[in-house]
Image 1 (tube, rainbow, N blue to C red):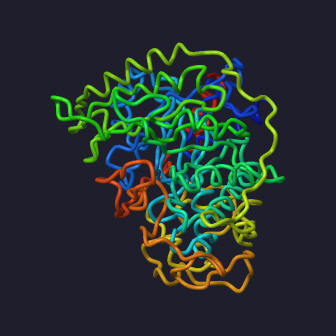
Image 2 (tube, one colour):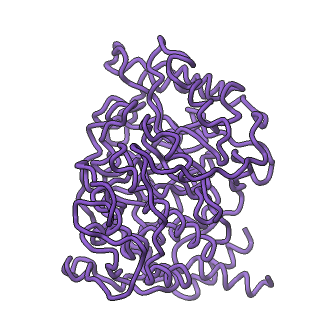
Length: 507
């Protein structure tokens, strides 16, 4: 690339208000583990789940610079190297927060779905449509150029009991589509995975389903488990069942980690918070578990009314709890754990689990034809958290925007479009699985769950108790949409852009 080409590239980046840093080595998958792409050292997630305001909040935590500046020093003090964010606005600018995180050595795992745009437990087939896929593709566009994006979650706890296990069919289809989109539209193949509820009856089948198959694009790149079995100082490696999880997944073929952990059904401390000694950290970051697990993320950074918070926020002030101090001590020790952990360099592909009395799945549906256009030509205009829900339409629902390069200017007024218009069906076929009604998963499938309609980590479905983990109640029920910030650079002259581009080249 010559100077003029580089200048043009820099100009294009500035035109959407994004300056991309190349100083952070990205994390890549090798065998059943993560590795730093430059140092070649194995990467273990020392993380926390981060969504101030609650997972259903329409405030994008990575778009509020003041909050990032407030919280990141505490995350760094905890020895955190990864955070998980459950919901973002794909029309917002995330440059400053992502740069603050990068400077602190912190990577981001991002859920692609939102409280209004996700796979439904009640009718998974119909919710898998072009509206949904355009939304998650636009979120990929919003974050694909940040090197400290570790990966994307295609779903969270969508299957939370055996009778809705088949919903994973459409989550895996979306995961496949996200991987195809990244392959065609990103400079690097960012990993895509799934975060599962720890349901005993389908624990192994669900994990195997996401890792199985001959088509690499249809397999998850990693798998997260939300586990809360290790409770208090009286528990142990064997009492918690962690020893059994090691046996269950001894031959697992992709990176596995705890996407949520940290039981709080324990005694209450003098400061009113649960006594969470986090002794599981000692086991997780040791030779006992490193051959299978790549660390995990503690639930959660902020207190949202459910007694899981490590800190309490009051405006710009942060009050830490005893749990914060306990985790800080554990993560300080965990940061010293190094080596490849005996990971599996060449794992054998897994066989897909057969259907039985607890587990059911279907062949993956074809990608909707309009979504294929997005994959080939770009997701077009991001619509943010204001976008109409994908869950009120059919499999053939039509997206509001046309395929094309990611745009920073708004050409669609989502408030002005009647909801019924936004979800009208087309006559094109979009998949092998068709919807048969609002209360079933698909034609011939088992009935849908009576749980919340939306089933990603940022909805009321997130509250549902798993078989072995406690309900995370309090702040995760439905949300109201809010206006999203624009990335437009109104009023910026060509001269100013050129100066900025030249500065970018010099840097």
